[in-house]
Length: 136
Length: 198
Figure 1 (cartoon, each protein chain N blue to C red):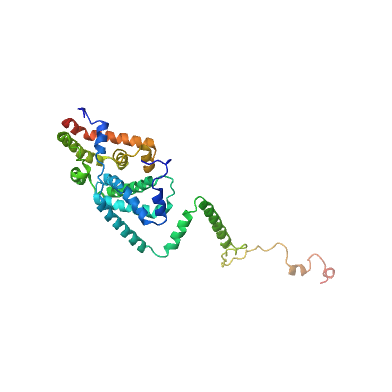
Figure 2 (figure 1 turned 90 degrees about the horizontal axis):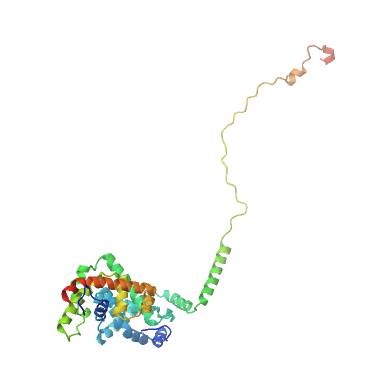
């Protein structure tokens, strides 16, 4: 190593390469495997029984490869169609919304007396005609 | 270390493990355990956490091996699981602020597992290198996780740029860039010591 301002890239890499881990040893891996198997058994026991058919189904679907997308599209189409057919429709003639009844009494319009004489007046003899001509 | 063009050397064990052969999966644990232990330990600097993360890595792999289709080598796939778990763990740890640099510094500096003791031909030089290693241990912790993982995989584990890009799911250019930046950071971290010692 030469004297310079900072360590060269090669020196850095040499130092880093020296950090390679020593193997853990056979005993460590025996214990590791024992612990691993124990934890996997615990996980299997904790898994609820109802999930098993679903996990099997998921496994089978994942094994379908690219065909699973075609199956998924078909299922999605069937689901949308079923939803469309089973959804109740709106009634064709809907009941009109009730309108509020007006209970207020309306004042009848006051009319001015007519200029024309009423029927009784017409029955009276005309003043300029003789009584015998009018029949009275 | 692994090439996609060549057949996966683990295909036999993987196929047997997919069929429920637990001994085949055990063989994969023993085969890759040490390498993954080294990777996780370089990232966490904590033996117990490394052990737990390694258990979790193999547990995830065991439960997902049915979905493994061989699009990448088993080795890459396993490394991806380990790297993701480790980075998630480090994010959570950082959020909790449980592992501060000050707390780690004293234990890391003295950790014989991270200091190579095999170069004893030149005791004086080795003593200097050990000093630098201690500084390097601390300097590694100042790198971001994204940079530390690239340095660990390339310089310590000996993986190629392409393999690292596949594991961390980024481009080779990004891997090279991160590596370059990380080396610069490590160089400047060791600079102070360097002038005194050499």
